[in-house]
Image (tube, rainbow, N blue to C red; front, side, top):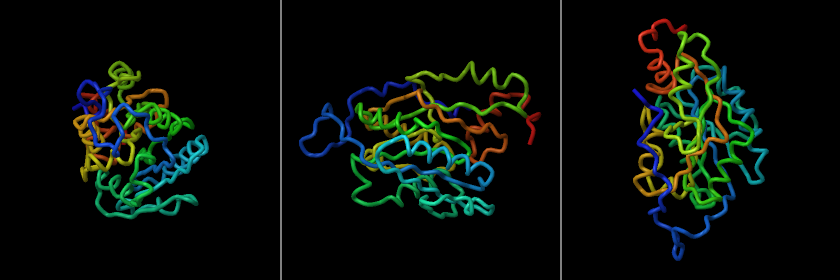
Length: 260
């Protein structure tokens, strides 16, 4: 079980995606003028405030408008009461992280947002982005990337069997050009997102699925490592086969010892 990896990356090839009339694949990219960030949420009252605070700080670090869309998916806790002013809200009842991300970006559906000048980014409600997160995404876009695939940093291994953290660090590539895919640190130009069909309504690995289709379409993918997102190492992950499941895989035979 290695849900954090895809094929060895060779994403620097010229994009084969369709372009506006007269634009060549080696032409300077359109400058990003707007960012939409989608956060899927299922019963995240404990961690959502920190996530939103971090996104607010990241938004202030860029000089273009940033819209944060929170998708409340089958929430029956207090998550809805914790949303801050200015956050857009989408409510679904699907219990599918892929469908939730898809619904969030669909809510930003207008000619202004489905263009080369809009950047779609996504993270998770149990994660906190660094202040330079969107700065890093924009730098990749301005350099010609169609998509940005970033790294994560675990928030600790309390409650996990001894050695789990050490094994994680041995197996994880935190360098540029890595082969990981995380929904907690992912971005794509809106027009390219639409061209490959966007997120699929999957219960797991929706991020890997999207990156696979971007790769197959010839998108230029920047696998960056300069703005890792701090993500929860809780034992009771919300997504089947998600990060918690990967950590259980690392814990191996000792997984039954995990607290919680």
